[in-house]
Image 1: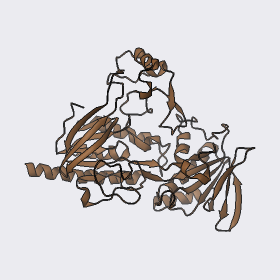
Image 2: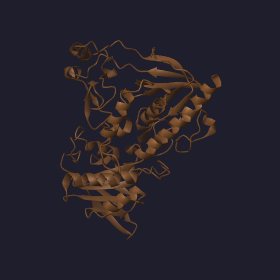
Image 3: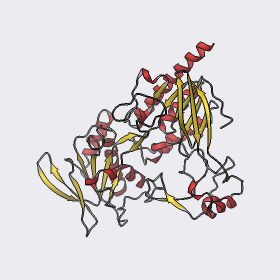
Image 4: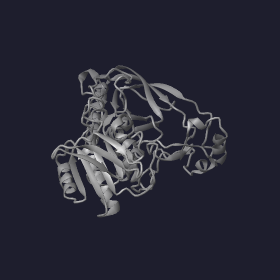
Length: 428
């Protein structure tokens, strides 16, 4: 990072998901010098892991391609992957930021030819597929990853497999001696866009995500639909690979619950409504979707989409907070137990597959920020003057869908621009 130049008129964007990328591009296209840092090997964030956007049901690759083209064309933007912020000090208009970059073990000579991947045998759980699939120890994070450069898993360093990868590279791109590096920069404003993580479904003990193969989370189900995902785009049961045509969706799985997430994540209803359409896409009329819900929170365009899903005779809505899930040992079917709160009838309903609509929580816990910021009880950063020149974007500020996250990012970029403009005016 020795060639990275920053001043108190530079804007630092932390996080390379849809919000961070949007904020960085908007600020850079306004003529500001921007440094975008991402802790993972590639930009893209959670959106890159989606099968389709809501509510238009288009693929994320389209929007990602446009953003990549805008980034590549802008000289004001400096991108650092595998980089985290380890310390921040100072005040609005003059922050000192320490960045820590982990070794990729692959340099800029990489052409993404894939020969290193072919040469290694080591396999690891794929973070991109939430552990539902294996990846090689030399890997490209995903098809549209940026930078389009391979990564060597640090667990391979010092093994014969790492040397095999190096020997297979024709371009001298693999450097097994790379070390962690650290640098301190001065910036004028910071856009914090570290995004969200899905709530750990294993913690919801009554639902058995940690015990039953055929109980999956909503983010895992999303990856199943990707043609390059763990099931090759098929809706199948993890236990036996059979097609899952009778699928139950459980809303507020761990949300609005004092034992888990007290807040409503607001995107979960939308996610489930979208995912019921995947069944129709795959099976036409030969499927059954059952949505177990407390209440459906849908407004504006979302309500229109909700009405379309309600009109689908293959989709039924059961107003109930599912009490527990057991497993039928003979069939492997998850069995849902609870009470229908409209008819007050007890049920014990078997399904092929259960999808838990898990909520969103901030990726950075409230006690892990490198500088004091005002956060609410759920860990999201509040818009508060005490935060100075640090502005939360996207899901760092609240549980938001893609559209609202982009709007939030644009607003945060404008606030950061105002800070560095004031610095420029003072120094001018």
